[in-house]
Length: 199
Image 1 (tube, rainbow, N blue to C red):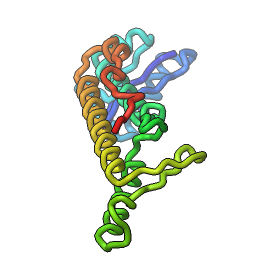
Image 2: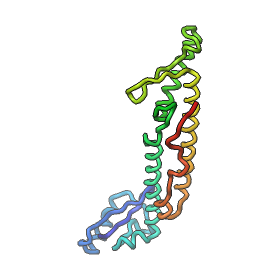
Image 3: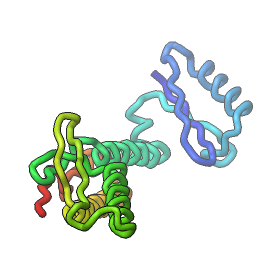
Image 4: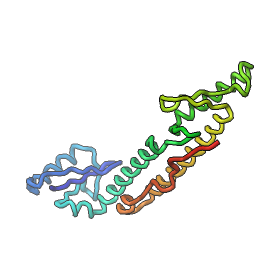
């Protein structure tokens, strides 16, 4: 396999060419493409570079920088997937599992507002301000207003803490300067998962 590298304003373009093509055929292909496409110069008066071996390509400064950025982008996607994975949002609240998502916290907030409005209108007393939450589609738990408020505070604190941890990992990944450091980076460290909320 032979490799032709072009460059745009934003990225590095890599073409893999069959090694059965002669050097002249590869060169002719590269010249035609570099004329037809909006590529910028890699070197003075040169819009492409040809490598006969993968080792030569990966060892070049031209490719290594882009390859490192690609690894970082992949690691950041893995970090995002881990951060939002349902298993890592599972929280034991009062003996029942819930998922600490933005949508669930919004649901709790909505119920708090609803109960507070009923109290302010005199429709119910504080003691009657109870939210019957159906968990896991199979059972109900009665949550007084004060308990709802405490659950929301603790869920939000946990979400904020994990978000800060995620941002810290993101900054660390972007600062890594070798592919081994990127590949070996463990972004699970510090995450608060499988937490239990007590009131």
